[in-house]
Length: 97
Image (cartoon, rainbow, N blue to C red):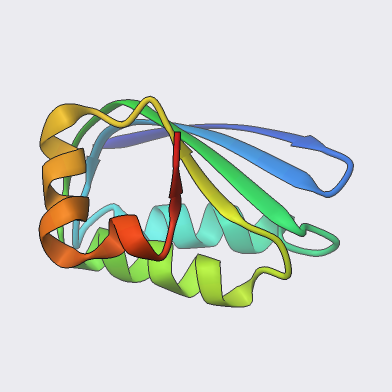
């Protein structure tokens, strides 16, 4: 299960994710972003309550990053999720705060 809280301020889309980002929930995140993507230059995701990310979730992050003219920023990343981002090299292509 994945809960998504959204807030759009000008050209910045802020998302807070809670739960698991996996094969079942990745399409839910992609749809939520696609709904708001017009005029968005940057996406900020708060991942403090994201307990798990799978390759399907990583694919959504990569797709979002490629579609932005600005940046994809991940904040408050849970240690287990951060480990996956480090192992996969995503820490080198995303901004993690």
